[in-house]
Length: 397
Image (cartoon, rainbow, N blue to C red; front, side, top):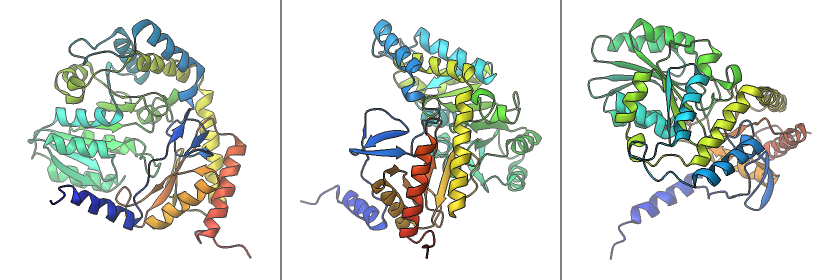
């Protein structure tokens, strides 16, 4: 009898042949700057836990107290019986933090992007998207059935060209960009993007997943970083990275949020966050507003590590944030670098095509506020040793 799943065996075999098949690494205990993965203690350079809040005592205590008083789960979707007081309080807090009229929380940053784009646009509309936007934006664009036009990464002249081409042909235009790009760590030129969109009466959406808690005053994101409040219609953020917990959110005008309550399919058809999540997120926003020094520690560490990689001779691309790629230009070499680093006690994941373009394969690193200088120096020594072994850096004579 023919195996109906044979095609999957073939696909997995091809991934292995390309060097792209990777077993899941298993984290023991907490997500931290030094942690235990696959039974080995490592310096962790692959976490989105920018500020170290996943283990902060105030978040842990807030989560435990919420479980004690409100239970382990919500038991329903938001539009039936799953909207708890904690959800409403968190959304009001996010709106105040982001300087918008309202906000709504989704189960993840991915569903926040995909659910928003797919619900506000249709086949009579057009989406104008940066070519390196996150997969969740791309999926939302496809689900919307709108026409999709792509402009060259961060190339505002090309954005203006595309906007001129679509002018007058569609019911609505949405210009969408990441605030910080997740693979390269560069920042969108948002003032020029906003100006171009405004000239054509377009809606503007920014995905600030990797800017939330990192850029702007107290980590308010790229809109605050560039002082563009009131000029970006839709701001998407995450509660899963610098905030240290789980989920995504959309912030914007009240009418947008009320529309998403009724039209965004992930919001309508997924059980809401448990009380522990909303309570821990509230504690995280308290910390962002009262202890901004943790964000400065993040940036101090990031500058130190970037300088160290550059001094060694590594190519870190166009990074402007704590996301720092080490570009090696070949998938198998990127995976070999990652594996070699792990053997030396550093966890940094290799990224290959199609996640990044051919010739741009890399190991992606993310420095956090909780790394010590000893951690970073240890990691730099490992990068130097493995980089020379693999011929990425010249061998010393």
